[in-house]
Image (tube, rainbow, N blue to C red; front, side, top):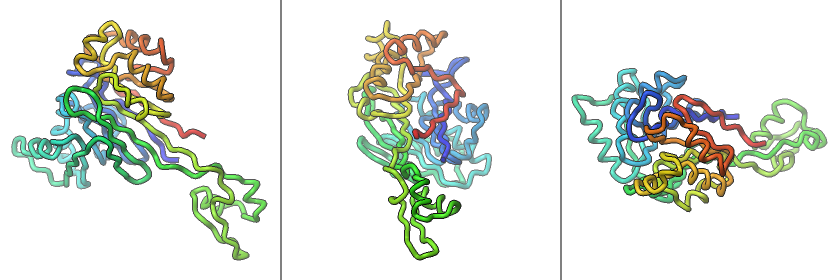
Length: 306
C-alpha cells in the first residue's frame, strides 16, 4: 500500500500570522510530494516540518493572489542552494509560463536544474503514475482552480480459498495475482487475476478547493472524496462579506461537504481575524460533524477503504 498523507504547511489567508502561515498544502504519496500553492515562507514551513522540499516533484498553483504563489522564488532558490538536480514541474492558470520566467529573472539567480511551467485549463485531467489530477475552474473573481487528486482503480479483494482450490501454492504467486498479474502453474495452467480477485476498488480521492465563493459544481467535483480541503475564510455572520470577496464561510463549506458525501472536511484559508478557530469549526459542525479547522503542520493519513 502506498502511503498518502496530507501535511498542512500554511492554513491562513491574506497574510501570515503568529499561528498560521499563508496557503500551502503538501500531499506526500510514497516518496513523492505534491505541493498545492506556495505562499510566502513555504520553504521555512518545510524546514519546520518532517518533510523535505527536495522531494517535491510538482507544484499546483490555484491562482495568482500573492498568498498563494509568492513563496515560489524562495523555494526554488532554496532547492538550488541544496544542489537539486531533478526537474520541477509547476502547474497553474494561464500566465503561469510568463510568471515563472519573471520569478526566475529576479536578482542574479539562475537555476541549474530544469523548471517546467505548465498552463492548465478547466476540465483538464493530468495523468501521472498511478493517479490523475483533475482541474476545475472556481469562482474567485480572477482565474482560479480547484484540484482533485484521484488514484487509479486498484485490484479487488483476494479470494484465498478460491486460489487454493485452483491449486495455486501460497507464496510469490499469491502476491503477483494480488497485484493484478497473471501467473503460470507448474502444470502449465495460466491463472488470470480475474479468477481469484473480486471487483476492482476505487483508490483514494482528495479535493482542494483553492479560494472560491460557494460553487454548486464543487459538489460533483468532490463527490465521495475521502477528504475535501475547502476555503472557509469567514464564519456565517460574515457571509455577505465572504461571498463578495470570493470566499466561502465554514457553514457553506460544510454544506458542500455534506452534499458531496465526503469522508472528512478540513477548513483552511482562515482569516487573520480569528484568534479562536473554534468559531469556524462549530459553524461547520452544525451541518457536517466531520469538519475540522486545519492547523499549520497538522498531518492526516488518508487510509485506503477496504
